[in-house]
Length: 182
Image 1 (tube, one colour):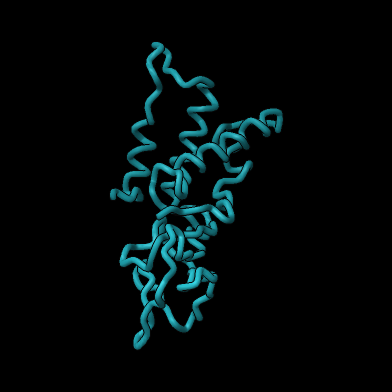
Image 2 (image 1 turned 60 degrees about the vertical axis):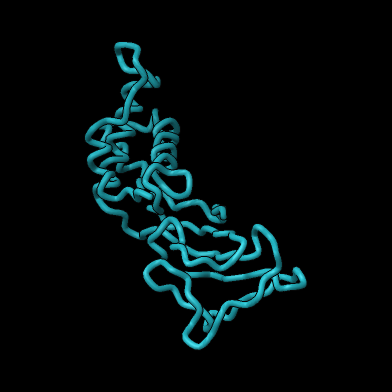
């Protein structure tokens, strides 16, 4: 099983929000701050993120050797764009959306149907879906602002005493509620 990012997440923080939080008066640091916004979101969001879930709206593709009874990763699931599989002859087929449903994060065959026979391949099944939130929780945005402020103020990966910098306690406290522990 693996998950591929098809469309990266939409930004959940704007330049203006970060600028206000950092109390900047002009746009002189805009390029740098926008890189910090992207880095903070990349650090928490989606398949590579610390939270283990999707925050900004994005399109992912779950690839597996078969139809499993596992939750689709990186919830919340907004919609399923397509479900494809390799048939017994190795030809790609598309499953009619009426033949499946998403229930509590699980992709299930619709009542009265079953999954088709598959070709033996590590990625015989591909589920493309949109995940994330249009309006992310305020706590996640606040945690990102705190991270950005720390990175902006201390432009290295070490604390003042030379030890490696750790995740600020306030950031971890804000994000722990949303973290997927699996």
